Image (cartoon, rainbow, N blue to C red; front, side, top):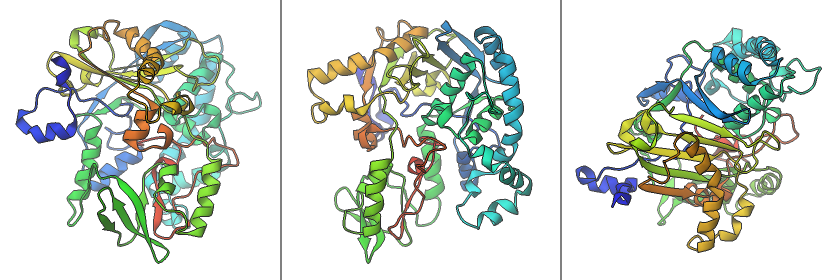
Length: 471
């Protein structure tokens, strides 16, 4: 039947030319920017330029939103002028003035932040060579403004230079900050908010999407590795433990028992908990001390409920945007309240190859608002009827968000999948399906460093910096 249109990537590869038409679902949020321009502050773009490999980019500027003040929804192009129109429609009497004052204050700070490639930043005196000598103007601006841009963003104190009186604008900035890194604006560095505001004013501002879907981004990185002599990327090869020899990380053991030796170092892009769990206790006393300190102290963002649908093209209106966000029913309470923020994506509107002819794919998720504690009782019991009923209940806000613009999508779906925090934990090997550390700016708790007390063992990714997933 139609349900057979979906298949795993491994099965498709095995079938080759005989593979049936398939739905290719996104695994991430499908929200990307700063990747299509040649000159960009996006660090992933820098990596692509270094390795001289990247996907083909599809660009678009249409964005939809359903907010408590706009339950009927709106669809506008991104950019500063259209944002002013949103403020005029839904903000209070001070909204436009608040925004203009905020932009005038933040944009000069952004000139330094956006003028320094983050790939050249390093935590030692070598930064004087990689930044100070090559980018003296932006570097001096960042040094001059360091106390401000490294402080948490404060838009609520009346004596703050970033004070925002209008409640709608405050809530909107909280939403953008949350979608960007999983924390509200008050837990976000001022530098990040300056970057975000400046991006509104970028000439020809667009969103980016990789042709072939998010997998194309990984494929480009793989090509960058494998075109170098003697280098290979082993996919679907779970690492089970880090080998420690003579007090140093010396390689990894993968599922099946194969050992891959390291000539210089082992670098973990796993989440913080998994990065520690890969090293057996007792192998390095200092590493064990750090393990106990950080795993007790570092809070985690919540997890997700995801929905994937394969639907006839007629189930989505032709004029629907490729993305829409739903917030509600009110702004009251924390931004990560269950079901409060849902993001819906229809990437096949941008790249028809992601669905069979005459069909679309839909990917929607509750944005980092599912507490794993509610799901823990189902560990090892995911075949139970109770688990299936619970998934259905918790996915209701996601289906409601899809129906805002595509009311017939679910009833006409030929493929339906609901993923829970347990799914995330199992398939992505993330502790409790977490969305990364919830380390707010300005607190006593700092992100772990890239170095660890175990010689030869390094961290990277969301266990060391704010912002989850691919930059």
